[in-house]
Length: 280
Ligand code: SAH
Image 1 (cartoon, rainbow, N blue to C red):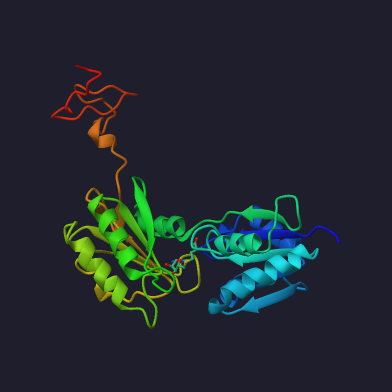
Image 2: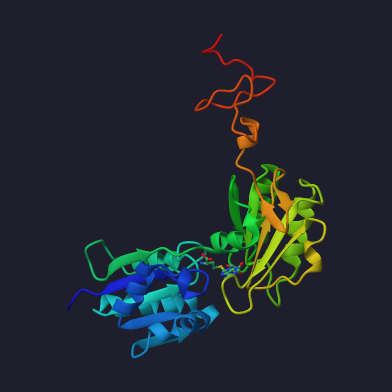
């Protein structure tokens, strides 16, 4: 039996201009395409004449298993995720199935993981530069993760002043989570902190708005929305949302260095941190 190949492919946000050449090549090379119907539709011109295994959203385990088994038996299979397959995508399930099957490196199928642009990147680009300093991603979906765990992470991320990207913020049935998330975030951020809502980035019904912590629940938020919540440093500018990298802590606008600072060395903070034992 010949060795198969399993491509685990991220196609990016939607439009092909934002799908990498490596992802397109993987799809072109595959004989069998496996994916959620919506993602299959996004790549339909690329898969003419290929065998397609479509399944609905709730059949993810079956989809991963089908992809792994076909590839194990010798086919070249592309399992398609939107964005990046390793970010709330199919890559995790693929490894679970491989582990259950007792797969080893060197056995069939050969695994090829192809990264894609995740929603944080595509959505960020549509609203400015929100992720220029430390950020984290949290999924609000409690279908597979206990809600108290998610709440604890929102609390910790808000307290630590991360920019927060919320994936899966709401769906038809799940509407309470984003309301609770706002209440938690509100305890750690001013109400005027910028918040972006980006829906269907780089797809037909794309919509992006920059609002703030106090007002973002006034807008429609659904399955195709990513919510970007600013840190205490994030500011709104000309309808954009910008998180500074911190150059202003060390340099003037004309590039001159502030008194007491040195290029290439840690920022000197005032008051200085307590001297450690190695300094004393
Ligand atoms: N693997 C995907 C994420 C899947 S989870 C990735 O890396 O992007 C699904 C969630 O991702 C959605 O609920 C939404 O919050 C976000 N998302 C995915 N594609 C998006 C797009 N084109 N525009 C806005 N949000 C998107």
